[in-house]
Amino acid sequence: QVQLVESGGGLVQAGGSLRLSCAASGRSFSTYAKGWFCQAPGKEREFVAAISYSTGRTNYADSLKGRFTISRDNAKDTWYLQMNSLKPEDTAVYYCAAATTMATMFNLGGLGMDYWGKGTLVTVSS
Image (cartoon, rainbow, N blue to C red; front, side):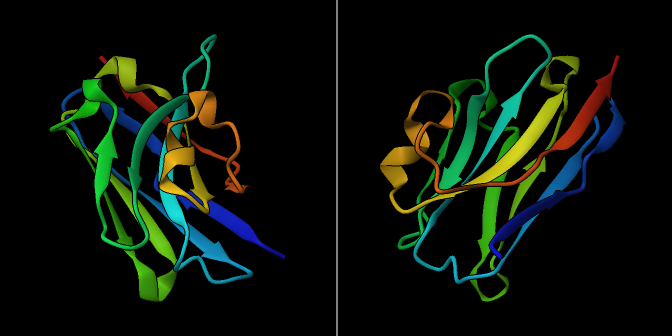
């Protein structure tokens, strides 16, 4: 059974940091693009960051550049989202996802992803 399991969410004060992890199992994800999405209360799910399986090229939502960093550990089939300088508006459920192509990561709302995690809640207090 293929699973993506997020961890690392929680409550943090504004200006703080969190590191999310996504542990994949059930198959090899070495040839999958990997990413993170978020969904704030009352809003649509949005793209956060992605990393390609081949070159490790990264992409970020424009509003998050410089604060968030995506990385991966191919040997562990795990990827991460380091979130720094957190703001109350970053409060959301964060989902990890995997897709066979990097281009899929940029579909609106993550449409077409091959696999999703169940999400981890990040709450940033002011």
